[in-house]
Length: 426
Image 1 (tube, helix red, strand yellow):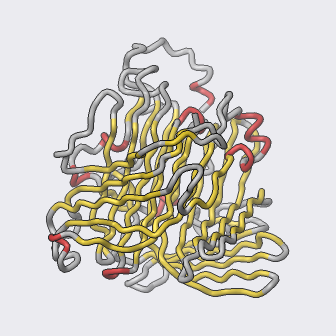
Image 2 (cartoon, one colour; image 1 turned 180 degrees about the vertical axis):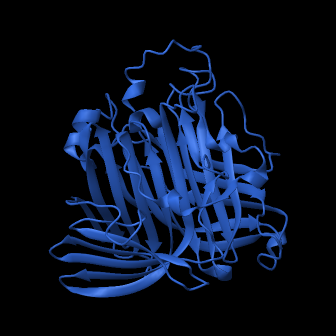
C-alpha cells in the first residue's frame, strides 16, 4: 500500500477513471451471483492501511438484537490492532450493552483449523463443517467480554441460502480505487451469508438467558484509509421467519469526491449491493451504481438502492439525518424452478433528531476506534464520523414468482424486523 504514496510512475491522465465499482463490473444480471469459495471468508490480515472485519448480526426471540464483530486494523508498518466488539440491545426495555476490547495474542488460523477461524485470549470464533446437508456450515463464537458478561453463539447457514459475493470469479465482490485495476490504490470487498440461524447464550452476573433467531454474517475489507474510501455508508438487514424465511440485505457506500469516472472531482459514486431471500432460498442478488452525473432508470431490470428522504439537520452531529429511508431491490430470480423478476421495497420511518423512531445510538466513531489508529492514520482531517443505528419493525413489499411463495406474483407485505445504519464520514 505504501507504493501508492511514494510512486515514481509517470502521471496518468487526470481525467481518466480512477474508480471501478463492483456494481458495474458485471453488467449481465446472470453474473451478479458469485457463490462463495472457502478462501473468500478467510482472514487475510493484510499489511498497509487495511481494515478487515467479520460481523455477525442476530435477532433473538424477545426482540433483542446482538451484534458481534472482530476488527483487524493495519496501519502501515505498525503492529495491527485487533478489537472484539459486541452490542446487545433490547428495544422492549431500552437496555443497551456495549463492549469493545482490544484483544491480545490474536491468531489465525488456530491450531488444527483454517483461516476462517480465529482466536485470542478474550474470544474464539471457530468455523466448522457440520456434516448436516440441511445446514452444512457454522461458526461457534465464544467471548469473555468482562468479569460479568460472557456470550456464546452457534451460527449456522442453511444449504438453501448459499453465501455470496457480487460477481463470479476471483474479482467478484471487489471495487477498485485508482487508474490501474492490476495495481490499485485501494479496494473494498464484501462477502455475505445473508440468512443464518443463531442459538445464543448470554451469561451475566444476575443470571443467563438462552435464545435463538435469524440473522446474517458479513466479511468485509477496506484496503485503503477509511476516510479516503467513502463519504457515506448505508446498510439494511431485514429478517422475517414468515413464509419459510425472508431476508433483505443491502450495503452501499458513496465515494469521496476524489474517486469517480473522470478522476479527482468526479466522485460521489454510490455502489450498492444486496440480495433477497424468499421462501428460505436465496432468490436474487442485486448490484447497481449511481453515478453523480446520471439519473438511475426506473425501467432497469436490476435495482439496488438506498434513498434518504426528508433530511433534517442534527445539531448533535452536524449532519443532515434522514427521517425516512427507502430501500429497493430488483432483479431476475436465480432459483432454477422459479424464474421471473423479483421486486422488493422497504420503507423505514426513523423519525428526526427530536423525535427518533427506533434509534439505538448515534455512534461517535472517533470515540470507539483505538487511539493509535486515530493518531497515526488521521482518519478525519477535520471531519467527525457518526453512525446512526436503528432497529424497527417493518414490512417488506415483494413481488415475484409464485413458485417461491404462493401469491407472490400479486404482491405480499411481509412483516419482520430491520436493523439499519446511516453512516456519515465527511
